[in-house]
Image (cartoon, rainbow, N blue to C red; front, top):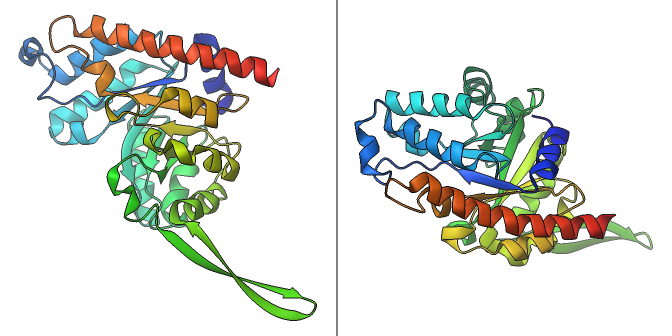
Length: 290
């Protein structure tokens, strides 16, 4: 899916909601466990209930890989069932030496029909490039995550020496940046605003203004609203741009809104609440940028 197609869906549906299919076999309604593939049955019902209220689905591959062959079957079935009108994200957090990343890219972009995959930038440019070589596909680079452990590395200050000449005198000045800032600035040059996004956690709202300055044109995948407590209002006000530039993900708050037979209806109700709130922010954005 191209950026233009994604933006068209956002404008058409008046939402930038991404529904996270973190479909934990231990939490789906018990009556589904008798189905041939319970996870796919659960996902199908959630998709049918929410497809008019969101523009993207994010499949957290860990919940599928843990189930072996059945899980992989459910993941592929789900991705194909979603279809082409929604942006399909494999939340796989891959990233390895080039030839290995090439195989990961083939798995998720050729064997399975995903539009995007989350990737870890720790191993550098050559570990990300294979994902960016596919036309109309996206790499979503981990930037600043929503977990408590983000302070261990991402929010550590890094000292950089900058060499310059002032009045023909050699001067070395020191600048400090967070590690995540260096990642954003470096990784932004590996791709374009049409094939590279960043993961920015909703619980890091105080950093969004700075992040938007560093990467003014990129889309952000924003997990952490709902169950993790991130503020949709704060994110939208600080990071939205002319064509929105946001995919805000909610997983547990939507898909596990009920554990009974009404789970799909309950998911639709919560998704509708998000959609309505997002529509108000999009309307404000249209007035601001018109």
